Length: 339
Image (cartoon, rainbow, N blue to C red; front, top):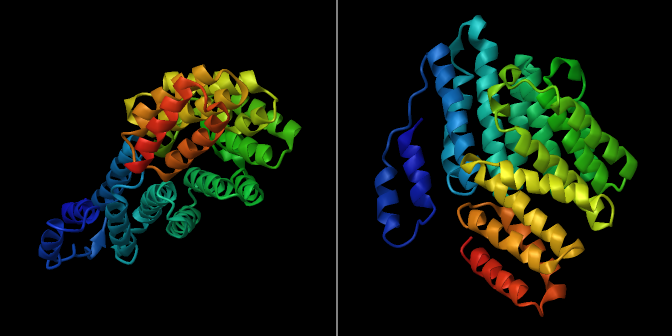
């Protein structure tokens, strides 16, 4: 990894005042030269960069070092033009696609949606050229999630259907992930019975999951992630009064199961649990859930989590007379002010 790019990005977060002269010092740094021949060592370096940035993203959110991963991606793409033995070509394309997906998801989390779409398209192209069905499925899943988040569940459903072409080539974990995303799109479209069937299919696939068979970018999809993804899929239906208990139990399992390596996922599931409870349950209990989620939310920089906090605050408006709820709203305001 290019440490000067990381430093430049870190300084760029506060590129005013005393930091500005420091950034000027970095402008004369020479770019890393592209090697004339790319082999196994360079491919492994790209994979390592993708894994490290992905770990950072899960723990702290996509906002802080997005420029750094962008710089790393530009360098990795330049390697595609270098000479490479044919036996390594597909691995190189897959590695660049892996990094492109990581960069795209960080951009999505930071609401740089245009950048995210471009990076996802790059990653999808690399996966197709490499014949990497696993990476293809993951990239299309993330494209679906972005489309659903941006209010276009129909496009999200289309991406999922594309990802599930030749799903026999995917692992059970990957099929569980895709069915959970399909359920989320269907729930947004109010296709209730289909959404519930998709959740059931996701559960069935996950019951056959073998982590040792999964590609490295699927390491995050454990029981907690599955509970959170399917709980999110049921959230919209639960707001309408259906499957409230099931949605709550899945979101609670996600909160309880996520480790410190997945703080963002734990925060988002915790906020959703608080929102659902505020809308359909006891506001005092909801305030307790929300207060716990704020501890995690305070450690990440995620525009998605911030918007979920705003949604929680809006659900809390109808219970503004309760002391616990007022305290929660105040804490949400303080957290959002620091994002």
